[in-house]
Length: 179
Ligand SMILES: CC(C)(COP(=O)(O)OP(=O)(O)OC[C@H]1O[C@@H](n2cnc3c(N)ncnc32)[C@H](O)[C@@H]1OP(=O)(O)O)[C@@H](O)C(=O)NCCC(=O)NCCS
Image 1: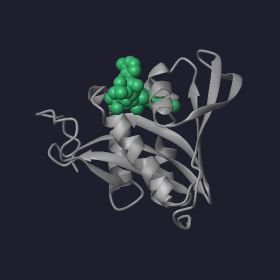
Image 2: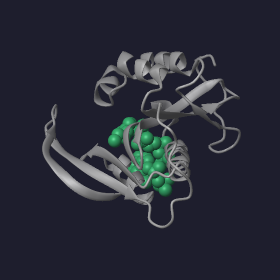
Image 3: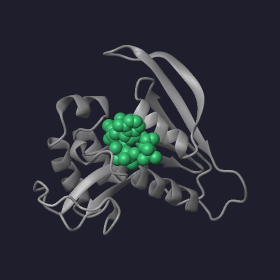
């Protein structure tokens, strides 16, 4: 699980693993991952010591990472809180050098599939209006605009878009026990 720089970029799809970042040594790996993030990204996307503590505590949080065993590298992470039938996704981040290769889509799709299987019926997130890349991704995975929080964000000031993805139909299984 070293965080050495990649020598050979992996193919976008083969050999990657989805990992539970709340277990084992993963919180520590996430801590090292965060150190490699630009300061601006850490501040914008809430990645800091409190995230690592949240992962280690494993309380309400459900966090998954996309790991490339071939390069021993964590490519990105996604997660948030799961409470009964609802989830709040607080984090989606792909290492900047690894973007635009399908990893964000793969990571978020896998996370949503796992939420579906756990019986989550509605997943919420919030995104800056200017973050077109993330918005396109969310729309394409079934999120819809629910609400606009006027001037919610600072530096720069802009609206926050609250988006929701709802699952209809029978509940496939009971929701995961929260700890
Ligand atoms: C948002 C983010 C996770 C996307 O990850 P990624 O691995 O680059 O995305 P993918 O390659 O899987 O692309 C998924 C979709 O995103 C959109 N997208 C990605 N890069 C894009 C770009 N440069 N321009 C426009 N759309 C883009 C497209 O809709 C794309 O779907 P497509 O492949 O069918 O065209 C990544 O850009 C990131 O980590 N950004 C910083 C953190 C962030 O903004 N998080 C969201 C906070 S709410």
